[in-house]
Length: 116
Image 1 (cartoon, rainbow, N blue to C red):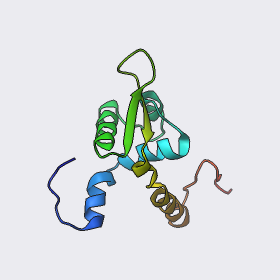
Image 2 (image 1 turned 90 degrees about the vertical axis):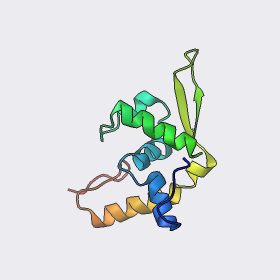
Image 3 (image 1 turned 135 degrees about the horizontal axis):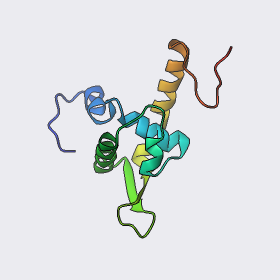
Image 4 (image 1 turned 135 degrees about the vertical axis):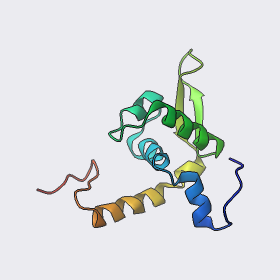
């Protein structure tokens, strides 16, 4: 994760790390839905492809937001968990969720059903 920065702006630098289409969704799945395994992330309704998922998990690990550890005798089967640094994004995701619920019609969270 030692790519040159476009600027020293904290918004720009943060977006370089977590601002793509998939990264926050992977973090969301770990944080709010308890997903830990590669196959579980693939079940999300947004339909991330395997190569993109593998790339995002690798980038999150390199950035220190996620740690992985084997969950079976298979060295390739990993559990992914947020680190303390990754968990510190919780308030950011909560604010994004609240903003979406307030400003984007027909959005909902699993624990907040859409009104009829």
